[in-house]
Image (spheres, rainbow, N blue to C red):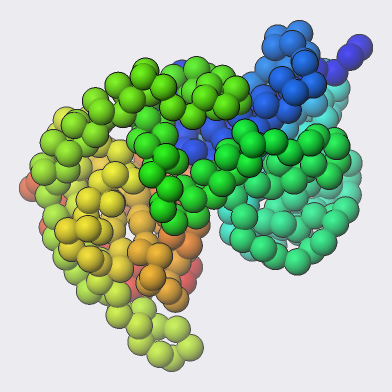
Length: 362
């Protein structure tokens, strides 16, 4: 039986819970399929999954697929499901293999040596057809270069499937890198991120991007609507500032934080809220507290030494040096608050400051 291809990253295919790098990764793979004149549903398909709560369990519905998995953290695969353990994930991978699936997996999130070795062991057990974690590639160089997932999946296509580069692929990786690594210097890429953050239909956007349509009247209309709503909701943020001391190699490092509580009305995304707060307060860190027990952490690009990802790890989350999140997870969350409002905001911030200062690095 001919194996069909399935392209997978994180989010909801109908909209929300994703970012440019996830969309860019899948759009790059769809671009490959279109260059090869593959037929959707017959030769390939794509989707986005909720790894944050269910690890890679959603993939168990698939049989006879060559699955390309991109921009999903290895640590989350291990610890996001109800039955989190190395053996449980090994069992998931064995079940996928028994269903005649092949798994290609790339990810650029920071990963510890312990977790990297676990996944390398999975690779040695032939549970992955290809594995590249933060540029640790069993078949190529083990040197580390900071990249986004879109760059990594495209390198795989160039080196192992002989796909030729083109302007669409180049634009996808350039835009994804600018957004996911926190540079945000390309206005064209930032506009698309705003559209993604507005819960625009990801399937439609992936089709646009893979065809080289990076802007049109429909996206412009969505962008204008989202910006007006964001500007209005940012004015409703409740904020407080704190200075937190960190100790590294017996040296005390002080960083300025802005904590912000989201408005009662839904719809304000973490990234535009953080941009607004960085511009207003010029802090080292912005911490966005969602009322339903979720926090998003952003670090200014110029503020070195302390990792947003390691702060989130204290609360059972994770992420990058400059962007991370924790809380509101069905399983294995150590974020201590289920709900936050105006009456509890200051007390919650004081508790978080105490936990962070005492437990960093985790």
